[in-house]
Length: 388
Ligand SMILES: *Cc1c(COP(=O)(O)O)cnc(C)c1O
Image (cartoon, rainbow, N blue to C red; front, top):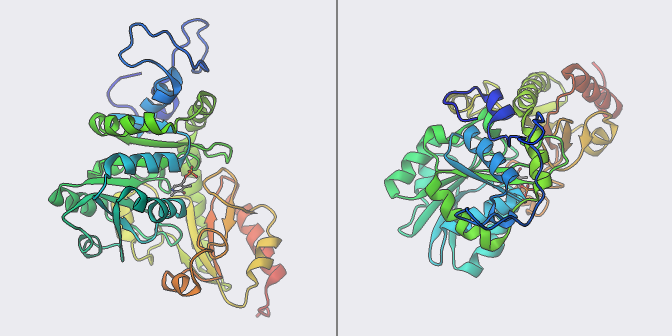
């Protein structure tokens, strides 16, 4: 499928699909071969070269979704992030990153960069001043992540893109939380778009994968390193991911809707101290989110009042699963203080506003009424507050 203008659901369903010329089946056939004829192809086909029929098919779909020329599929989100950063950062180079960064990315930067002689600094906030303050003469990359985890702060994509152009540096975004349904950073001039496809692209909590979309020239630079590092994804999982992505828009829109409903409901609940959702008008970045996002995502965080026993509340839930990761069709919830941010000191958590009562909530596609009932019943079970 190549034709010019296609709607996002059509892209998800059809773009890139491998034609079954033999049996005319309705879906892409799966090619598990790790050995291909070496004639008549510029680059020999091999799974680690990212160019098997199924890898190429899915890459086309993801590139199109992110409005980029090309894409590569990786074995995990971290394989995509680490390979892409190392492809553009060499000894003596410097990268500016946000202070609130996905834990795995943060660990990669602070544990590995010194071995490569790569320098880094973290912006202290989300404004232009915060980022421009960190720019150095050897800065080569600005890496961002928006919305942020877990407080859902928004970074201005157009601002970052402008700042990067002024300094002649490459921009990268981790677009996992938004998904291509809610945010296409290429519209704002961001160069390289990275995903943990484990999340909204996979969407069923059963696939670990990553993806990078960019211009042909940037993808070539990433590919040159990627083939040496070897972080490609098995064709079987590539094929499963292609299948998952056909329903991505339907899932994500249902998740957006549930998150908005729950954010509104939680915001008026007497046991909830605060709700963090960029789709609520009182969120500090509501206007910016509205400007650059097509939906406010299926993610939100909320803080329980001190009177509520957090562990008891989580244990009392019946539908919502207290578990790691996010973006599956099933609603999940976790305590950042006990999981993603557990290794930070108490003071650092306090500085970042990560309280013990804070919960990160990933909305699934269940009926919103059932999710509300689940929370209400759990509240009733553990509430130490006397009913009025
Ligand atoms: C999960 C996640 C990653 C890492 O992806 P893996 O597939 O687990 O390697 C990176 N960034 C964000 C925002 C994530 O949520």
